[in-house]
Length: 332
Length: 296
Image 1: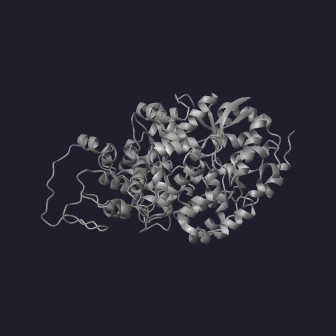
Image 2: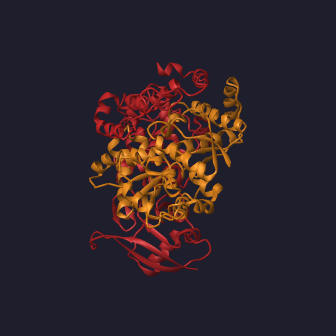
Image 3: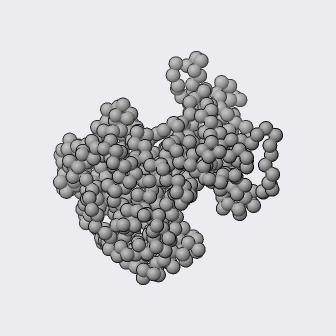
Protein backbone atom coordinates (compact mmCIF):
# COMPACT_ATOMS: atom_id res chain seq x y z
CA UNK A 1 0.00 0.00 0.00
CA UNK A 2 1.24 3.45 -0.91
CA UNK A 3 0.68 6.14 1.70
CA UNK A 4 1.70 9.72 2.46
CA UNK A 5 3.58 11.05 5.45
CA UNK A 6 2.91 14.76 5.95
CA UNK A 7 5.47 16.10 8.38
CA UNK A 8 5.76 19.39 10.21
CA UNK A 9 9.04 21.03 9.24
CA UNK A 10 10.78 23.96 10.81
CA UNK A 11 14.44 24.80 11.06
CA UNK A 12 14.72 28.17 12.81
CA UNK A 13 18.19 28.68 11.29
CA UNK A 14 16.87 28.76 7.72
CA UNK A 15 13.06 28.81 7.72
CA UNK A 16 11.02 31.96 8.22
CA UNK A 17 8.00 29.97 9.32
CA UNK A 18 6.93 26.33 9.73
CA UNK A 19 5.59 24.34 6.80
CA UNK A 20 4.51 20.76 5.98
CA UNK A 21 6.38 18.46 3.62
CA UNK A 22 4.90 15.30 2.12
CA UNK A 23 6.69 12.00 1.48
CA UNK A 24 5.19 9.03 -0.35
CA UNK A 25 6.12 5.57 0.92
CA UNK A 26 5.11 1.94 0.59
CA UNK A 27 4.21 0.06 3.75
CA UNK A 28 5.19 -3.42 4.89
CA UNK A 29 3.30 -5.69 7.30
CA UNK A 30 3.48 -4.34 10.84
CA UNK A 31 5.08 -1.06 9.77
CA UNK A 32 5.01 1.60 12.47
CA UNK A 33 5.03 5.38 12.13
CA UNK A 34 8.60 5.34 13.46
CA UNK A 35 9.57 2.82 10.77
CA UNK A 36 8.10 5.20 8.21
CA UNK A 37 9.95 8.24 9.59
CA UNK A 38 13.24 6.31 9.66
CA UNK A 39 12.65 5.25 6.08
CA UNK A 40 12.04 8.89 5.09
CA UNK A 41 15.24 9.93 6.83
CA UNK A 42 17.32 7.11 5.37
CA UNK A 43 16.02 7.16 1.81
CA UNK A 44 14.19 10.39 1.01
CA UNK A 45 15.21 13.31 3.21
CA UNK A 46 18.08 13.12 5.66
CA UNK A 47 17.24 16.56 7.06
CA UNK A 48 14.03 15.42 8.81
CA UNK A 49 14.71 15.55 12.55
CA UNK A 50 12.97 13.54 15.26
CA UNK A 51 13.89 11.78 18.50
CA UNK A 52 13.94 8.00 18.71
CA UNK A 53 15.81 5.26 20.45
CA UNK A 54 14.48 1.91 21.66
CA UNK A 55 11.71 1.27 19.07
CA UNK A 56 9.93 -0.79 21.75
CA UNK A 57 7.71 1.70 23.67
CA UNK A 58 10.15 1.66 26.57
CA UNK A 59 12.27 4.81 26.23
CA UNK A 60 9.52 7.29 25.42
CA UNK A 61 11.70 9.26 22.98
CA UNK A 62 9.52 9.14 19.87
CA UNK A 63 6.34 10.73 21.27
CA UNK A 64 4.76 13.09 18.76
CA UNK A 65 1.36 14.10 17.45
CA UNK A 66 0.12 11.62 14.90
CA UNK A 67 -3.01 12.77 13.10
CA UNK A 68 -3.61 15.24 15.92
CA UNK A 69 -3.25 12.82 18.85
CA UNK A 70 -0.06 12.41 20.86
CA UNK A 71 1.30 8.87 20.56
CA UNK A 72 4.54 6.93 20.54
CA UNK A 73 5.55 6.63 16.87
CA UNK A 74 7.09 3.21 17.55
CA UNK A 75 3.82 1.87 18.99
CA UNK A 76 1.53 3.22 16.27
CA UNK A 77 0.75 1.07 13.26
CA UNK A 78 0.62 2.69 9.82
CA UNK A 79 -2.33 0.48 8.80
CA UNK A 80 -4.67 1.60 11.59
CA UNK A 81 -3.86 5.28 11.08
CA UNK A 82 -4.36 5.07 7.32
CA UNK A 83 -7.64 3.22 7.82
CA UNK A 84 -8.94 5.99 10.10
CA UNK A 85 -7.37 9.15 8.66
CA UNK A 86 -6.06 8.21 5.19
CA UNK A 87 -2.71 9.94 5.88
CA UNK A 88 0.11 10.04 8.43
CA UNK A 89 0.27 13.65 9.57
CA UNK A 90 3.00 14.17 12.16
CA UNK A 91 3.52 17.21 14.38
CA UNK A 92 5.78 17.91 17.35
CA UNK A 93 4.48 17.46 20.90
CA UNK A 94 2.13 20.14 22.21
CA UNK A 95 2.75 22.46 25.17
CA UNK A 96 6.51 22.63 24.51
CA UNK A 97 8.66 25.01 22.41
CA UNK A 98 9.86 23.56 19.12
CA UNK A 99 13.60 23.23 18.53
CA UNK A 100 13.56 21.74 15.04
CA UNK A 101 11.00 19.72 13.04
CA UNK A 102 9.57 17.11 15.44
CA UNK A 103 12.02 17.85 18.26
CA UNK A 104 10.80 19.91 21.22
CA UNK A 105 12.51 21.56 24.16
CA UNK A 106 11.77 19.32 27.15
CA UNK A 107 13.35 21.51 29.81
CA UNK A 108 10.15 22.85 31.37
CA UNK A 109 8.71 19.33 31.58
CA UNK A 110 11.74 17.94 33.41
CA UNK A 111 11.97 21.02 35.65
CA UNK A 112 8.47 20.19 36.84
CA UNK A 113 9.43 16.57 37.47
CA UNK A 114 12.37 17.83 39.57
CA UNK A 115 10.10 20.27 41.38
CA UNK A 116 8.07 17.51 43.04
CA UNK A 117 11.27 15.94 44.49
CA UNK A 118 11.13 12.62 42.65
CA UNK A 119 13.04 10.65 45.26
CA UNK A 120 12.43 9.31 48.75
CA UNK A 121 12.84 11.97 51.39
CA UNK A 122 15.47 11.24 54.03
CA UNK A 123 14.95 11.27 57.78
CA UNK A 124 17.18 14.17 58.75
CA UNK A 125 16.73 16.79 56.13
CA UNK A 126 13.04 17.23 56.37
CA UNK A 127 11.79 20.78 56.82
CA UNK A 128 8.15 21.57 56.38
CA UNK A 129 7.38 23.16 53.03
CA UNK A 130 10.97 22.83 51.88
CA UNK A 131 12.21 19.43 50.83
CA UNK A 132 15.90 18.69 50.73
CA UNK A 133 17.74 15.77 49.26
CA UNK A 134 20.09 13.66 51.29
CA UNK A 135 23.37 15.25 52.35
CA UNK A 136 26.46 14.22 50.47
CA UNK A 137 27.40 10.70 51.45
CA UNK A 138 24.20 10.05 53.41
CA UNK A 139 22.31 6.90 52.56
CA UNK A 140 18.81 5.83 53.49
CA UNK A 141 18.88 2.60 55.45
CA UNK A 142 15.89 0.70 54.33
CA UNK A 143 14.88 -2.53 52.67
CA UNK A 144 14.70 -2.73 48.88
CA UNK A 145 11.17 -3.33 47.65
CA UNK A 146 10.45 -5.13 44.44
CA UNK A 147 7.78 -3.62 42.24
CA UNK A 148 5.12 -6.17 43.19
CA UNK A 149 5.76 -5.56 46.86
CA UNK A 150 5.49 -1.82 46.31
CA UNK A 151 2.14 -2.33 44.63
CA UNK A 152 0.91 -4.45 47.53
CA UNK A 153 2.09 -1.90 50.03
CA UNK A 154 0.61 1.13 48.32
CA UNK A 155 -2.11 -0.12 46.01
CA UNK A 156 -0.24 1.93 43.42
CA UNK A 157 -0.04 -0.34 40.43
CA UNK A 158 0.58 1.92 37.52
CA UNK A 159 2.44 5.18 38.19
CA UNK A 160 5.85 3.47 38.55
CA UNK A 161 5.45 2.41 34.90
CA UNK A 162 5.76 6.01 33.65
CA UNK A 163 8.42 6.34 30.93
CA UNK A 164 8.40 10.18 30.91
CA UNK A 165 7.42 10.22 27.24
CA UNK A 166 5.41 13.46 27.66
CA UNK A 167 2.31 12.17 25.83
CA UNK A 168 0.12 13.23 28.78
CA UNK A 169 1.84 16.59 29.06
CA UNK A 170 1.38 17.25 25.35
CA UNK A 171 -2.37 16.59 25.57
CA UNK A 172 -2.96 18.22 28.98
CA UNK A 173 -5.69 20.88 28.97
CA UNK A 174 -4.33 22.26 32.24
CA UNK A 175 -0.92 23.03 30.71
CA UNK A 176 -2.53 24.59 27.63
CA UNK A 177 -4.36 26.95 29.96
CA UNK A 178 -1.50 27.54 32.38
CA UNK A 179 2.07 26.79 31.26
CA UNK A 180 3.16 26.88 34.91
CA UNK A 181 0.84 24.01 35.87
CA UNK A 182 2.88 21.01 37.04
CA UNK A 183 1.08 18.69 34.63
CA UNK A 184 0.01 15.06 34.81
CA UNK A 185 3.39 13.27 34.75
CA UNK A 186 4.87 15.29 37.61
CA UNK A 187 1.68 14.99 39.67
CA UNK A 188 1.46 11.23 39.08
CA UNK A 189 5.03 11.04 40.34
CA UNK A 190 4.13 13.18 43.34
CA UNK A 191 1.38 10.67 44.11
CA UNK A 192 3.77 7.76 43.63
CA UNK A 193 6.10 9.18 46.30
CA UNK A 194 3.35 10.39 48.60
CA UNK A 195 2.06 6.81 48.74
CA UNK A 196 5.44 5.17 49.29
CA UNK A 197 5.72 3.86 52.88
CA UNK A 198 9.48 4.45 52.81
CA UNK A 199 9.09 8.18 52.18
CA UNK A 200 9.83 10.36 55.19
CA UNK A 201 7.06 12.90 54.72
CA UNK A 202 5.56 12.92 58.18
CA UNK A 203 3.54 16.10 57.93
CA UNK A 204 2.13 15.62 54.47
CA UNK A 205 4.12 18.46 53.02
CA UNK A 206 4.20 16.79 49.62
CA UNK A 207 0.45 17.35 49.61
CA UNK A 208 0.86 20.87 51.00
CA UNK A 209 3.25 21.81 48.20
CA UNK A 210 1.12 19.98 45.65
CA UNK A 211 -1.91 22.05 46.74
CA UNK A 212 -0.27 25.36 45.91
CA UNK A 213 -1.29 27.33 42.79
CA UNK A 214 -0.33 25.53 39.56
CA UNK A 215 -0.45 22.26 41.48
CA UNK A 216 -2.92 19.41 41.70
CA UNK A 217 -6.04 21.57 42.09
CA UNK A 218 -5.33 23.24 38.73
CA UNK A 219 -6.14 19.97 36.96
CA UNK A 220 -9.08 20.58 34.59
CA UNK A 221 -10.10 16.89 34.81
CA UNK A 222 -10.22 16.61 31.01
CA UNK A 223 -9.13 12.94 31.21
CA UNK A 224 -6.75 13.36 28.25
CA UNK A 225 -3.75 12.14 30.28
CA UNK A 226 -5.46 8.83 31.03
CA UNK A 227 -6.82 8.48 27.52
CA UNK A 228 -3.52 9.04 25.72
CA UNK A 229 -0.97 7.45 28.07
CA UNK A 230 0.77 4.70 26.06
CA UNK A 231 1.53 2.77 29.26
CA UNK A 232 -2.02 2.62 30.64
CA UNK A 233 -1.39 5.01 33.53
CA UNK A 234 -4.12 7.34 34.75
CA UNK A 235 -2.48 10.51 36.12
CA UNK A 236 -5.90 12.12 36.57
CA UNK A 237 -6.98 9.34 38.94
CA UNK A 238 -3.83 9.83 41.01
CA UNK A 239 -4.52 13.57 41.11
CA UNK A 240 -8.06 12.95 42.37
CA UNK A 241 -6.73 10.50 44.98
CA UNK A 242 -4.39 13.25 46.18
CA UNK A 243 -7.34 15.67 46.38
CA UNK A 244 -9.11 13.19 48.63
CA UNK A 245 -6.01 12.55 50.72
CA UNK A 246 -5.31 16.29 51.10
CA UNK A 247 -8.87 17.08 52.17
CA UNK A 248 -9.01 14.15 54.62
CA UNK A 249 -5.78 15.47 56.13
CA UNK A 250 -7.24 18.98 56.46
CA UNK A 251 -4.91 20.44 53.80
CA UNK A 252 -7.68 22.68 52.56
CA UNK A 253 -6.13 26.11 52.04
CA UNK A 254 -6.45 25.98 48.24
CA UNK A 255 -9.45 27.27 46.31
CA UNK A 256 -9.67 23.85 44.66
CA UNK A 257 -10.05 22.03 47.97
CA UNK A 258 -12.62 24.59 49.14
CA UNK A 259 -14.50 24.07 45.88
CA UNK A 260 -14.70 20.30 46.38
CA UNK A 261 -15.76 20.66 50.02
CA UNK A 262 -18.34 23.25 48.98
CA UNK A 263 -19.93 20.82 46.53
CA UNK A 264 -19.99 18.00 49.09
CA UNK A 265 -21.52 20.33 51.70
CA UNK A 266 -24.13 21.50 49.23
CA UNK A 267 -25.12 17.89 48.47
CA UNK A 268 -25.28 17.08 52.18
CA UNK A 269 -27.59 20.03 52.81
CA UNK A 270 -29.87 19.96 49.76
CA UNK A 271 -29.05 16.91 47.64
CA UNK A 272 -28.22 19.37 44.88
CA UNK A 273 -25.34 21.48 43.64
CA UNK A 274 -26.07 24.96 44.96
CA UNK A 275 -24.24 27.09 42.38
CA UNK A 276 -24.19 30.26 44.50
CA UNK A 277 -23.10 28.57 47.71
CA UNK A 278 -20.36 26.60 45.95
CA UNK A 279 -19.04 29.80 44.37
CA UNK A 280 -18.99 31.61 47.72
CA UNK A 281 -17.33 28.64 49.47
CA UNK A 282 -14.69 28.36 46.73
CA UNK A 283 -13.60 31.95 46.22
CA UNK A 284 -15.15 33.88 49.11
CA UNK A 285 -17.06 37.14 48.91
CA UNK A 286 -14.05 39.00 47.43
CA UNK A 287 -13.83 36.45 44.62
CA UNK A 288 -17.53 36.85 43.96
CA UNK A 289 -17.12 40.63 43.80
CA UNK A 290 -14.39 40.18 41.17
CA UNK A 291 -16.87 38.21 39.10
CA UNK A 292 -19.67 40.68 39.62
CA UNK A 293 -19.93 41.69 35.94
CA UNK A 294 -20.41 38.03 34.96
CA UNK A 295 -22.97 37.52 37.75
CA UNK A 296 -24.89 40.68 36.83
CA UNK A 297 -24.83 39.69 33.15
CA UNK A 298 -26.20 36.25 34.00
CA UNK A 299 -28.80 37.78 36.33
CA UNK A 300 -30.04 40.14 33.62
CA UNK A 301 -30.52 37.14 31.33
CA UNK A 302 -32.58 35.38 34.00
CA UNK A 303 -29.83 32.84 34.62
CA UNK A 304 -29.27 33.60 38.29
CA UNK A 305 -29.79 30.32 40.17
CA UNK A 306 -32.29 30.35 43.07
CA UNK A 307 -30.89 31.70 46.33
CA UNK A 308 -32.51 28.90 48.30
CA UNK A 309 -32.76 25.48 46.71
CA UNK A 310 -35.64 23.09 47.22
CA UNK A 311 -34.45 19.84 48.80
CA UNK A 312 -34.58 16.72 46.66
CA UNK A 313 -37.31 14.21 47.48
CA UNK A 314 -36.23 11.67 50.14
CA UNK A 315 -33.37 13.92 51.23
CA UNK A 316 -32.94 11.78 54.32
CA UNK A 317 -31.36 9.08 52.06
CA UNK A 318 -28.42 11.40 51.35
CA UNK A 319 -27.99 12.23 55.02
CA UNK A 320 -27.79 8.47 55.72
CA UNK A 321 -24.94 8.20 53.16
CA UNK A 322 -22.95 10.97 54.87
CA UNK A 323 -23.66 9.46 58.30
CA UNK A 324 -22.71 5.95 57.18
CA UNK A 325 -19.39 7.17 55.85
CA UNK A 326 -18.73 9.32 58.91
CA UNK A 327 -18.44 12.40 56.73
CA UNK A 328 -20.83 14.62 58.65
CA UNK A 329 -18.29 16.25 60.91
CA UNK A 330 -16.20 17.27 57.89
CA UNK A 331 -18.89 19.80 57.11
CA UNK A 332 -19.07 21.56 60.46
CA UNK B 1 -42.49 6.09 22.81
CA UNK B 2 -39.16 5.10 24.38
CA UNK B 3 -39.02 5.51 28.16
CA UNK B 4 -35.97 6.84 29.96
CA UNK B 5 -35.25 7.72 33.56
CA UNK B 6 -34.46 11.41 33.09
CA UNK B 7 -31.38 12.76 34.85
CA UNK B 8 -31.02 16.43 33.85
CA UNK B 9 -28.34 17.21 36.45
CA UNK B 10 -28.25 20.31 38.62
CA UNK B 11 -27.34 23.11 36.20
CA UNK B 12 -30.25 22.30 33.87
CA UNK B 13 -32.57 22.73 36.85
CA UNK B 14 -30.96 25.94 38.08
CA UNK B 15 -29.05 28.47 35.94
CA UNK B 16 -29.49 26.50 32.72
CA UNK B 17 -33.25 25.88 32.74
CA UNK B 18 -33.39 26.48 28.99
CA UNK B 19 -31.56 23.17 28.58
CA UNK B 20 -34.19 21.25 30.53
CA UNK B 21 -37.03 23.01 28.69
CA UNK B 22 -35.57 22.38 25.23
CA UNK B 23 -34.86 18.74 26.10
CA UNK B 24 -38.51 18.24 27.05
CA UNK B 25 -39.57 19.99 23.82
CA UNK B 26 -37.57 17.69 21.53
CA UNK B 27 -38.33 14.57 23.58
CA UNK B 28 -42.01 15.01 22.87
CA UNK B 29 -41.36 15.56 19.15
CA UNK B 30 -39.09 12.51 18.88
CA UNK B 31 -41.14 10.06 20.92
CA UNK B 32 -39.00 9.99 24.06
CA UNK B 33 -40.86 9.72 27.36
CA UNK B 34 -38.79 11.39 30.07
CA UNK B 35 -39.63 9.82 33.42
CA UNK B 36 -38.62 12.26 36.17
CA UNK B 37 -36.64 11.14 39.21
CA UNK B 38 -37.33 13.83 41.85
CA UNK B 39 -35.41 11.75 44.40
CA UNK B 40 -32.16 11.79 42.37
CA UNK B 41 -29.30 13.80 43.85
CA UNK B 42 -26.41 15.74 42.36
CA UNK B 43 -23.75 13.41 40.88
CA UNK B 44 -21.00 15.39 42.61
CA UNK B 45 -20.08 17.71 39.76
CA UNK B 46 -17.14 15.59 38.61
CA UNK B 47 -15.14 16.34 41.76
CA UNK B 48 -16.85 14.41 44.56
CA UNK B 49 -14.22 11.65 44.22
CA UNK B 50 -11.78 14.18 45.61
CA UNK B 51 -13.90 14.43 48.77
CA UNK B 52 -14.67 10.77 49.34
CA UNK B 53 -14.72 7.96 46.83
CA UNK B 54 -17.33 5.94 48.71
CA UNK B 55 -19.66 8.93 48.81
CA UNK B 56 -19.43 9.04 45.00
CA UNK B 57 -20.42 5.36 44.90
CA UNK B 58 -23.30 5.77 47.37
CA UNK B 59 -25.06 8.82 45.95
CA UNK B 60 -24.67 7.74 42.33
CA UNK B 61 -25.40 4.10 43.15
CA UNK B 62 -28.63 5.41 44.64
CA UNK B 63 -29.49 7.22 41.38
CA UNK B 64 -28.76 4.06 39.38
CA UNK B 65 -30.93 2.04 41.80
CA UNK B 66 -33.81 4.54 41.41
CA UNK B 67 -33.64 4.09 37.62
CA UNK B 68 -33.44 0.31 37.97
CA UNK B 69 -36.53 0.38 40.16
CA UNK B 70 -38.34 2.29 37.40
CA UNK B 71 -37.05 -0.27 34.89
CA UNK B 72 -35.50 2.27 32.52
CA UNK B 73 -32.04 3.29 31.33
CA UNK B 74 -30.86 6.78 32.30
CA UNK B 75 -30.93 9.67 29.82
CA UNK B 76 -28.41 12.41 30.62
CA UNK B 77 -27.92 15.86 29.13
CA UNK B 78 -24.65 16.77 30.84
CA UNK B 79 -21.21 15.35 29.96
CA UNK B 80 -19.98 15.34 33.55
CA UNK B 81 -23.11 13.64 34.91
CA UNK B 82 -22.73 11.09 32.10
CA UNK B 83 -19.14 10.28 33.02
CA UNK B 84 -19.73 10.21 36.78
CA UNK B 85 -22.75 7.90 36.57
CA UNK B 86 -20.96 5.72 33.99
CA UNK B 87 -17.82 5.45 36.15
CA UNK B 88 -19.87 4.39 39.17
CA UNK B 89 -21.89 1.96 37.07
CA UNK B 90 -18.67 0.36 35.74
CA UNK B 91 -17.24 0.06 39.22
CA UNK B 92 -20.41 -1.44 40.68
CA UNK B 93 -20.71 -3.93 37.83
CA UNK B 94 -17.03 -4.98 37.86
CA UNK B 95 -16.12 -4.75 41.53
CA UNK B 96 -18.22 -7.06 43.77
CA UNK B 97 -16.81 -5.46 46.91
CA UNK B 98 -17.91 -1.98 45.80
CA UNK B 99 -21.34 -3.32 44.85
CA UNK B 100 -21.77 -5.04 48.21
CA UNK B 101 -20.73 -1.94 50.15
CA UNK B 102 -23.07 0.25 48.10
CA UNK B 103 -25.95 -2.20 48.45
CA UNK B 104 -25.41 -2.29 52.23
CA UNK B 105 -26.09 1.45 52.17
CA UNK B 106 -28.95 1.15 49.69
CA UNK B 107 -30.66 -1.51 51.81
CA UNK B 108 -30.92 1.05 54.63
CA UNK B 109 -32.97 3.34 52.39
CA UNK B 110 -35.08 0.61 50.79
CA UNK B 111 -33.21 0.30 47.50
CA UNK B 112 -31.03 -2.27 45.75
CA UNK B 113 -28.85 -2.13 42.63
CA UNK B 114 -27.99 -5.11 40.47
CA UNK B 115 -26.20 -3.43 37.55
CA UNK B 116 -28.92 -3.51 34.89
CA UNK B 117 -29.09 0.19 34.06
CA UNK B 118 -27.23 1.81 31.16
CA UNK B 119 -26.28 5.48 31.18
CA UNK B 120 -26.77 7.21 27.83
CA UNK B 121 -26.30 10.77 26.69
CA UNK B 122 -29.08 12.43 24.66
CA UNK B 123 -26.70 12.95 21.69
CA UNK B 124 -26.16 9.24 21.24
CA UNK B 125 -29.74 8.29 22.10
CA UNK B 126 -30.87 10.48 19.20
CA UNK B 127 -28.20 9.04 16.89
CA UNK B 128 -28.40 5.38 17.87
CA UNK B 129 -31.88 4.75 19.24
CA UNK B 130 -34.18 7.34 17.71
CA UNK B 131 -32.11 7.20 14.52
CA UNK B 132 -30.94 9.97 12.23
CA UNK B 133 -33.50 9.06 9.55
CA UNK B 134 -36.36 9.66 11.96
CA UNK B 135 -34.71 12.90 13.07
CA UNK B 136 -34.31 14.01 9.46
CA UNK B 137 -37.98 13.30 8.77
CA UNK B 138 -39.02 15.36 11.78
CA UNK B 139 -37.13 18.46 10.62
CA UNK B 140 -39.46 21.35 9.77
CA UNK B 141 -36.82 24.08 9.49
CA UNK B 142 -33.64 22.95 7.79
CA UNK B 143 -30.30 24.24 9.03
CA UNK B 144 -29.26 24.55 5.39
CA UNK B 145 -26.57 27.19 5.00
CA UNK B 146 -25.78 27.27 8.72
CA UNK B 147 -22.23 26.44 9.74
CA UNK B 148 -22.37 24.65 13.08
CA UNK B 149 -19.24 24.05 15.20
CA UNK B 150 -19.75 20.98 17.38
CA UNK B 151 -18.00 21.26 20.75
CA UNK B 152 -17.92 17.75 22.22
CA UNK B 153 -16.11 18.64 25.44
CA UNK B 154 -14.30 16.00 27.47
CA UNK B 155 -16.53 13.73 29.50
CA UNK B 156 -18.73 12.49 26.66
CA UNK B 157 -15.59 11.06 24.99
CA UNK B 158 -12.96 10.42 27.66
CA UNK B 159 -11.93 8.12 29.15
CA UNK B 160 -13.07 5.85 26.33
CA UNK B 161 -12.70 2.84 28.63
CA UNK B 162 -15.82 4.15 30.43
CA UNK B 163 -17.79 6.33 27.98
CA UNK B 164 -17.93 4.30 24.82
CA UNK B 165 -20.26 6.26 22.57
CA UNK B 166 -17.87 7.38 19.83
CA UNK B 167 -14.33 7.12 18.41
CA UNK B 168 -12.33 9.15 20.93
CA UNK B 169 -9.66 10.08 18.37
CA UNK B 170 -12.00 11.07 15.60
CA UNK B 171 -15.62 11.29 16.81
CA UNK B 172 -18.41 11.74 14.31
CA UNK B 173 -21.73 11.47 16.18
CA UNK B 174 -22.21 15.21 16.53
CA UNK B 175 -21.33 15.92 12.90
CA UNK B 176 -23.76 13.22 11.69
CA UNK B 177 -26.53 14.77 13.76
CA UNK B 178 -25.81 18.28 12.44
CA UNK B 179 -25.92 16.96 8.86
CA UNK B 180 -29.25 15.21 9.56
CA UNK B 181 -30.65 18.61 10.56
CA UNK B 182 -29.42 20.04 7.25
CA UNK B 183 -26.52 22.00 8.75
CA UNK B 184 -22.87 22.08 7.80
CA UNK B 185 -20.52 20.86 10.55
CA UNK B 186 -17.41 22.98 11.02
CA UNK B 187 -14.18 21.04 11.36
CA UNK B 188 -11.74 22.45 13.91
CA UNK B 189 -9.07 21.00 16.18
CA UNK B 190 -10.46 22.10 19.54
CA UNK B 191 -13.85 20.40 19.08
CA UNK B 192 -12.74 17.61 21.44
CA UNK B 193 -10.67 19.72 23.83
CA UNK B 194 -11.49 20.96 27.31
CA UNK B 195 -13.67 24.01 28.05
CA UNK B 196 -11.86 24.57 31.36
CA UNK B 197 -15.02 24.66 33.46
CA UNK B 198 -13.73 22.46 36.25
CA UNK B 199 -11.23 25.12 37.32
CA UNK B 200 -13.31 28.20 36.56
CA UNK B 201 -13.57 29.00 40.28
CA UNK B 202 -9.96 27.99 40.96
CA UNK B 203 -8.20 29.89 38.21
CA UNK B 204 -10.55 31.89 36.03
CA UNK B 205 -7.92 33.35 33.71
CA UNK B 206 -6.44 30.05 32.65
CA UNK B 207 -9.80 28.28 32.63
CA UNK B 208 -11.56 30.75 30.37
CA UNK B 209 -8.62 30.87 27.96
CA UNK B 210 -9.44 27.25 27.01
CA UNK B 211 -13.03 28.17 26.14
CA UNK B 212 -11.84 31.35 24.41
CA UNK B 213 -9.36 29.51 22.21
CA UNK B 214 -12.03 27.03 21.10
CA UNK B 215 -14.50 29.81 20.26
CA UNK B 216 -11.82 31.78 18.40
CA UNK B 217 -10.83 28.76 16.33
CA UNK B 218 -14.46 28.03 15.45
CA UNK B 219 -14.95 31.68 14.46
CA UNK B 220 -11.83 31.57 12.30
CA UNK B 221 -13.38 28.55 10.57
CA UNK B 222 -16.49 30.65 9.77
CA UNK B 223 -18.84 29.04 12.28
CA UNK B 224 -22.24 30.75 12.66
CA UNK B 225 -22.93 28.96 15.91
CA UNK B 226 -21.27 26.55 18.34
CA UNK B 227 -23.22 23.72 19.99
CA UNK B 228 -22.38 21.74 23.10
CA UNK B 229 -23.90 18.64 24.72
CA UNK B 230 -22.88 19.86 28.21
CA UNK B 231 -24.31 22.69 30.35
CA UNK B 232 -20.95 23.12 32.12
CA UNK B 233 -19.24 23.74 28.77
CA UNK B 234 -22.10 26.12 27.98
CA UNK B 235 -21.36 28.18 31.08
CA UNK B 236 -17.70 28.47 30.09
CA UNK B 237 -18.43 29.19 26.44
CA UNK B 238 -21.42 31.53 26.74
CA UNK B 239 -21.67 33.01 30.24
CA UNK B 240 -17.91 33.59 30.45
CA UNK B 241 -17.38 34.47 26.76
CA UNK B 242 -16.69 38.14 27.55
CA UNK B 243 -14.11 37.22 30.20
CA UNK B 244 -12.55 34.69 27.83
CA UNK B 245 -12.25 37.35 25.11
CA UNK B 246 -10.42 39.67 27.50
CA UNK B 247 -8.13 36.89 28.70
CA UNK B 248 -7.06 35.77 25.24
CA UNK B 249 -7.17 39.31 23.85
CA UNK B 250 -9.33 38.39 20.87
CA UNK B 251 -12.73 39.52 19.68
CA UNK B 252 -15.28 36.82 20.39
CA UNK B 253 -18.96 36.85 19.54
CA UNK B 254 -20.28 33.40 18.76
CA UNK B 255 -23.72 32.18 19.84
CA UNK B 256 -23.46 28.98 21.90
CA UNK B 257 -26.37 26.56 21.90
CA UNK B 258 -27.23 23.55 23.99
CA UNK B 259 -27.61 20.43 21.82
CA UNK B 260 -31.41 20.11 22.28
CA UNK B 261 -31.83 23.80 21.39
CA UNK B 262 -30.23 23.18 17.99
CA UNK B 263 -32.45 20.16 17.41
CA UNK B 264 -35.44 22.08 18.77
CA UNK B 265 -35.03 24.94 16.28
CA UNK B 266 -34.94 22.45 13.40
CA UNK B 267 -38.08 20.81 14.80
CA UNK B 268 -39.96 24.11 14.81
CA UNK B 269 -39.21 25.50 18.27
CA UNK B 270 -39.55 29.26 18.67
CA UNK B 271 -36.95 31.65 20.11
CA UNK B 272 -38.94 31.81 23.34
CA UNK B 273 -39.57 28.06 23.57
CA UNK B 274 -35.85 27.38 23.25
CA UNK B 275 -35.01 30.07 25.82
CA UNK B 276 -32.44 31.79 23.62
CA UNK B 277 -32.96 35.11 25.40
CA UNK B 278 -31.22 33.53 28.43
CA UNK B 279 -27.93 33.35 26.53
CA UNK B 280 -25.27 36.04 26.56
CA UNK B 281 -24.59 35.97 22.82
CA UNK B 282 -27.64 36.50 20.66
CA UNK B 283 -28.78 33.76 18.29
CA UNK B 284 -31.35 36.00 16.63
CA UNK B 285 -29.51 36.58 13.31
CA UNK B 286 -28.90 32.86 12.75
CA UNK B 287 -32.45 32.05 13.87
CA UNK B 288 -33.86 34.46 11.23
CA UNK B 289 -31.81 32.66 8.58
CA UNK B 290 -33.15 29.26 9.72
CA UNK B 291 -36.74 30.52 9.78
CA UNK B 292 -36.43 31.13 6.03
CA UNK B 293 -35.73 27.41 5.49
CA UNK B 294 -39.26 26.12 6.22
CA UNK B 295 -39.75 22.60 4.86
CA UNK B 296 -43.21 21.59 6.01
